[in-house]
Image (tube, rainbow, N blue to C red; front, side, top):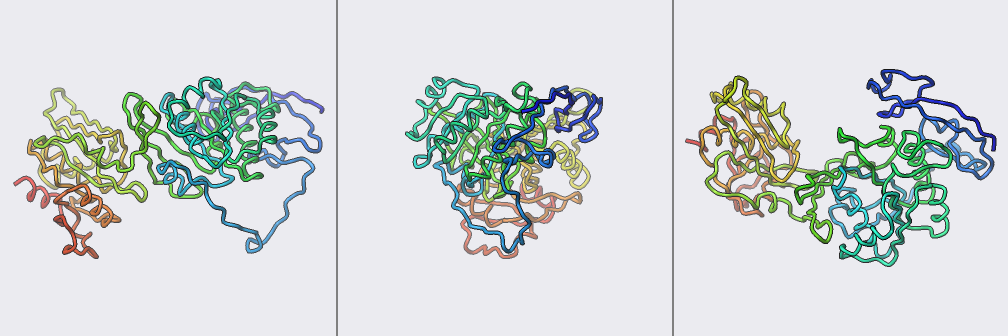
Length: 468
């Protein structure tokens, strides 16, 4: 093959290519992100896998000499609904939308030491009727076997390959034809078509494109682990997230036992699903009823605590909100929130002061969502407001009372979606009272409920019923 060497500059944030160095990327507007990389161009021959000139923009690969695709009417495209691969991990099945889709590419990212490799190895060992190839570029076979000894699942059809060269990986794949392939991690792979080091923008993009083409052509699902940056986003070019079918975020504090698996992108299901795990000595344990765990460490008689109901995809959760309102010692009062949007907290504080007469402008306010969750459901507003008033007045709220409603700028209590699911979950956990919006009562049969549902119209009305 004829080889030509050229120099190009790539943006480490978005993958934009430029013939010369630039201080500011014209695509993502980030500063000082361009790095110089050597590009080796080879003239491909028939049968070689190489990035084509038309596929450069999309990151796709073509088989040189293969038949070109022809335009086809969408009604004439052959479509057969393939059964998903159902794993023994119910949390992963839920997050993926019902299981692993054949031919899909799933990227999972998370902090170092959070448990990404343990989760992927656990999934590989649980697929008893599937041949799985676990490719590791970070650990030796002995290390993987040592971790597998702690996992209760066992599968004789899981194969381990410690390799980083994609050409050698595909040579082994051609021999054994696995049903599922796991890559740990994409940043460690190198393609023989490029001379850059592993983890560079070009290498990550090219290796991912090769794996995606392999997955689509053979129908083999590929699960890839990805590193993240200090900002929390996936390392490598941003185009990587566009190329794959599903992006999962594995979150949690390394010093705590609970882990959360979120969907950031999913072409085959909802992007609002959530999976919860507990890290134990034998691996990651699925948490089937997270509400019980999130509420397990409550004490009666403490002020500043309220229970709210949120929806994560199709799953209702009851979470505990803790508030602390104290007189400000310094000139400027502090506003701190963990797991709750700080701007929304400031809005709710303004509503309480303007519409309900609570003077909070000289108080430090701290909000915490227990269990390490980050809640974006607006139905948590009412519980946050109640916890703030409870802490400010130093009056405890009954532990058998929960809340589900949004709070508007006028102090009105607004309706939220799927209120029946929220009420049902609260009933299962033994709650006796639930405050909702009076605009949310349509269609609810109060005679069939075991708990008391109390509709309210404003925050002032709620405060009068609870704290007077």
